[in-house]
Image (cartoon, rainbow, N blue to C red):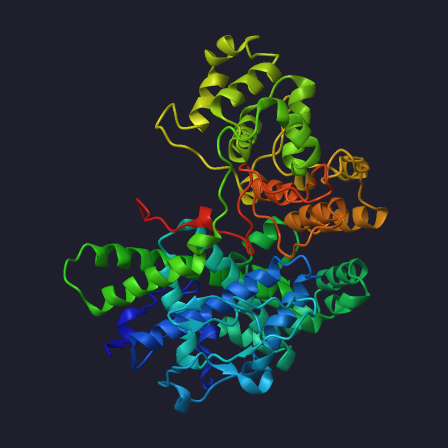
Length: 578
C-alpha cells in the first residue's frame, strides 16, 4: 500500500497576530489545538490511514453540526456538554507527553469502554466502512448515548490539516468548517477551564503569542475598575455572579479587543482592555478563526498549484482521495431534493397552496403582493424562484405576476412581458441574460437579506425581521389545515407561541420555523430543521389527505420522500479566483 509522508501532505503556514510564537518557559507539551495546529505532523501514514483520520474528523464535525441545529437542543451550553461527553480521554488529561508525539492512530479511535456499542445509527458507508457519527441521532439535550471518540495528538493535527485541504475549494464549505471547528474548540476550552479556571486562559493566550495577564495590584486598586465591577455585578443574574469578582478579569492590548470595544462592552484603561474570562475566550476564538481562514486560503493556493502539475505525486493522490470522500460526505445521489416539474402547479392553485402549505416567509410575500399590488426586487426574486421550484411554469408565472402586480405591471400579460419585471421572471427561468436557470433560495439566503425599507418591500424570514408584537399577531392567526379543506383550521397554542418567540429572541430562527411547522402539522414526524422554504412546502404537502380520508399520493410537484437533509446546493465548485 502506498505510504504518504504526513508532514508533506498537510502544512500550516502561519503569521501570528502578536508576532513570533512565544511559548512560556518550562511549558509542557500541549494538545495541538492549543497552538492552533501550528506544528506539522510527524511520521508516515498510508493512504488508508489518512482516509480513516479525515473520515473520523468529518463525521465528528458533522455530528457537532447536527447537535447545533437540532430542534431538541435546549441551549448552546447543552451542545458543549454533549461534545465534552464524547471526548473522555481529553477530560481525563489536559496534555500529552513527548513520547506520545510521532504516533499516528490507524483505527477510528472510538472508546469502547465509554459506550461505543450504544451507537446504533445507520450512518453512511464510506470506503467499505460504516460511519458512526454521521448516523447518530442523539441530541445535545440529553438524548440517546453516542460513542465516545479519541483523537491521538498526531491524529488530531493531521485530520484537521487534511480537512483544510478538503474544504478549501468551496466558499460555503470553508465557512462551515470554520464555524464547526469553532464550536469544537469552545467545548475543549470549556473542558480545560474546568481544570484550571484561573491560569488556563493566560497560558493559552501566551502560548499563541497573544499578550494576556491577570490584573496587577495597581489595576485592582483603580476606582474605575471597582465601579465597572459593580456595574457588571448588578447587570449579571444569579448564575453569573462571577462577573463581579476581580480575579475573573484579565488585561489584554486594545488591538486584540477591537470588536468588544466597538460594542462598548469592556473597560479600557491605560492602553489595556479589561476583559472578563468569557471575553478573553472570545478573543482567542476570533484569532483562531482568522488563523484557520488564512490556512484555508493557503490550502487553496497549494491545491491550485498542484492542479497545474501534470505528473502524479503523493500530494495529488491524497487530494484525489479527499475530493472523492468529500463528494460522498456532502450528499448521496439518492438523497437530493428534486424541485417540482414545470406545469404541476397552475396559477390558480397558488393562493390555496399559500394559505395551506407555504412556509411563513412565502405566505407573507404572497399576502403582501395580493394586498399591495407590488413587490420590490428581493421579494420578487425569492418568491419567483420559490414558485418555480414548486412547479409553476414560466407561462403561469408570467400570468400570475401580471395579474398581481397591479401598480406597475402594465395591466395585461402582454404589457407585463415588456416591462423589466417580465424580464426578471424570464431571467429566473433561464431564458434571458446568461441563460442560467436558478434554484430556489435557502433559509440561509433569506436570513442574510437586508431589512425591508418601505411599504412595497416584503422579503426575508419573518422570524428574524418581524418585531415581537407583529410576530405574535401572525402566530396567533388560524391557518388552513394542511390535511385539506374538510378539516378544521388550526393555530399554534399559547405555549407554542411563547416557545417560538423565545427562539426568535435567541436568534434561533430556523428552529422557530420548525416549531411553527410542528404546531400547525400535529401529525407530522420530523426531527430535522428545514434548510429552505421549498423543503418546508414539500414536507407540508405530504400531510394532505384526499376525499377518501387517505393520505394523498405525492404529486409530481413534490419530491420523493427522503430521510435526511440534502446539501445539494452546497456542492463543491472550483473557485475561479483566490
